[in-house]
Amino acid sequence: MTEPFGIALVGCGTVGGGVAKLLLEQGQRLAERAGRPLALRRVVVRDVGKARAAAIPANLIGAELQTALNDPEVQVVVELVGGTDWARRAILAALAAGKHVVTANKAVLAEHGTEVFDAARKHGRAVAFEACVMGGVPVVAVLGQSLAANQVLSLQGILNGTCNFILTGMSAQGRSYAETLAEAQQRGYAEADPTLDVDGTDAAHKLAILAQLAFGATVPVPSIDRRGIAEIHNLDIRFAQELGYTIKLLGEAWLDATTRQLALHVSPVLLRHLTLLAQVRGADNAIRITGDAVGETLLYGRGAGQMPTASAVVADLIDLAVGRAQRTFQAMKLWSGGPSNVVLRPSATVRSRFYLRLQVADRLGVMADVTRCLADHRISIASVVQHEAPEDHEEGTVPLVIMTHTALTEVFRAAVAALDRLGCIVSPSVYYPVED
Ligand code: NAP
Ligand code: HSE
Image 1: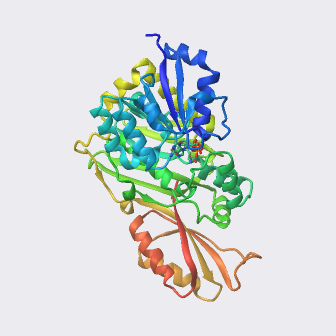
Image 2: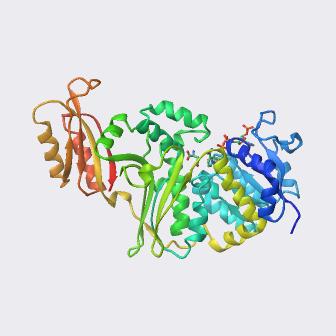
Image 3: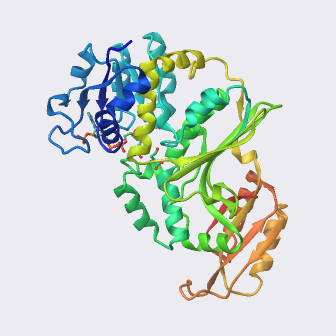
């Protein structure tokens, strides 16, 4: 088949601009890979007059989605708008109009996957979404195809480039949270609303999609226990470093293959400095996937930004133009609403070691009160760090850091709540899981 594969780009900002560049500047290469030209037929944006990253012919640009949907020469709609309202309706309208859909919108798939995939099946079209998780790193293809022989047992991933960029800036360069977040936005890594990045929601969206691919589990996003990075203090980064750890925001899932229970969470985690995930810097992402046949695998690469994400989008376009994506889509039966073969397990029932930072009154008997409270909750202490009060400390208080032995998360949380009720604790305690 040599007739062009017609594409409508809906959204032409950071990612859409990169996709337009690849389509317009690498046409020859893409046509060779796809077996036919990938033709950019329409570009739908909000502001038609805005300057664009690629030299898009003016006659292709418009503000009306319907014009693209009515065009018989458009076979696929690429949704790169973001958000869950307009974008969801645009995706459903594209499928109803008989177009395939490529999207980088993890929020829509995580929150409306069943509706979107049911609509695609109803209209006999495919949805491809490699760019939704880990930007340019091909984790969707790996879980959906390359590791298909496995029962995945666990996933442990740095899934948000913005958070990793901020944490790297704070720990390696001693920069402030606000300064590094502003730079992540300026570089095009962050979501339009960066709260979604820093509060862990974006990573939870990605984890929900990974859970669908790896475990066939449709996990409601609100059921994923999540904490972001906004409360991480430079003090915690320094204490973690002193103890031999790096703080990373991880999305994790563990399957108990016997009971079929699946636990998931998004949380800052202390990782040993020398582990592979601890070494992942800047906007890079990485994921450790353990399968029952393959054992441990690690994928690593650029998790956000214009061209890495465009690389994933255009790979999906090539797959659709060749016809592979349609077959994969049919075979995988994602979000099909069938009975789930896993049961969600509250992450509070997971056992872990913990890093705990208390801001305590600098007076007699405080250490005894704290250790007694932990002992009452059967929490065993592995190490304690208390330095002379730093110069910038609150008058009469001092940070006290405790590393625990393994404890049940819900028991540990109860112990922290009890500690925070002690008169000697002057501000809410900070704690993160530790993985050795
Ligand atoms: P962006 O830079 O804000 O671009 C959004 C685009 O959507 C703009 O071109 C905007 O038009 C257009 N748009 C907004 N509302 C519209 C409407 N009602 N009708 C038509 N067009 C509309 O966003 P982005 O960073 O490229 O992200 C796009 C999607 O990719 C999001 O789902 C995001 O989560 C996902 N993603 C982003 C990255 C990344 O690194 N940035 C990585 C992976 C996935 P104007 O240009 O005229 O304003
Ligand atoms: N805002 C997202 C991130 C974009 O920083 O990871 C990639 O999905």
